[in-house]
Length: 308
Image (cartoon, rainbow, N blue to C red; front, side):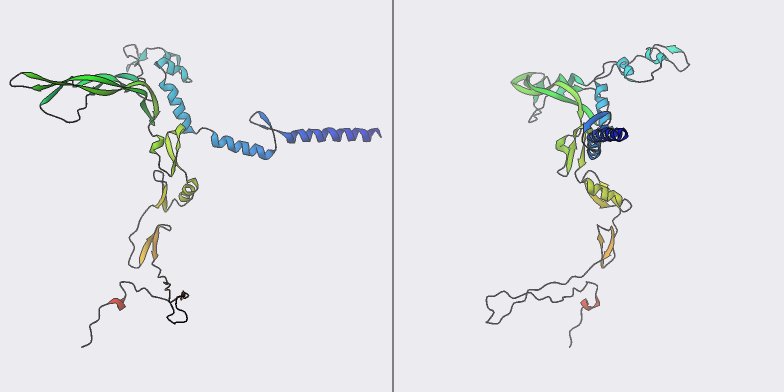
């Protein structure tokens, strides 16, 4: 009897343990209530939303763009030798030299740039002074080739320009003053060169990757499976033939099979109407009558002389 009680208790404990293991599963170190099927779906969700290598490289490049010195950049790198941290470097003869200067990174910032005043209608008899000035515009380099230094905030500043005319000899004659606006950049950052407005209707914009991607992923996969005859065009999201052949007479180039196919002659359905009075005003059924379309090179199309 005691043995039976022990077996019953063991069975209850084992059942509770199995129940608990079904309620909780471990995925990436975290416990979630659910089933094993939920675990697989959660893994697929993480894979779909996990940043790609391209997105990670762009995010890392944006961090590098904010650095102000080379030393700050060296602190981000693993495995830098101690002698490289020092500003002195080795020359060609193997001796230490401190003549080389570490460059200051040209960060993406507003900086003075020469801008000309734009004249709506050019008149060779008029002279504008000054003809140009320096205003803050975004300048500097970005670490990733898919990004460029772009303005985040701008404002229009009106400048007063003196307009004169050349008189007789060396005399300069007053003409007028003009107000000419110029755009001034206030804040700058490294941003994607390709914008969402650059994407076509058949594409979706991936902001983290600075690019447009085709919506029809299934068509792209299907096209790449026929890689030996077809090629996928990511810019237009179309699958086209690698080679377009000139077909002989009676054949045409099929864009689906990417080869010459014989022209098929189809039967044309003619709607025949019964002219009887009993059926007047009623639509007559269509009768399929075979009509042969004679090709242009058929001998029957040759001109025949009329009988004399």
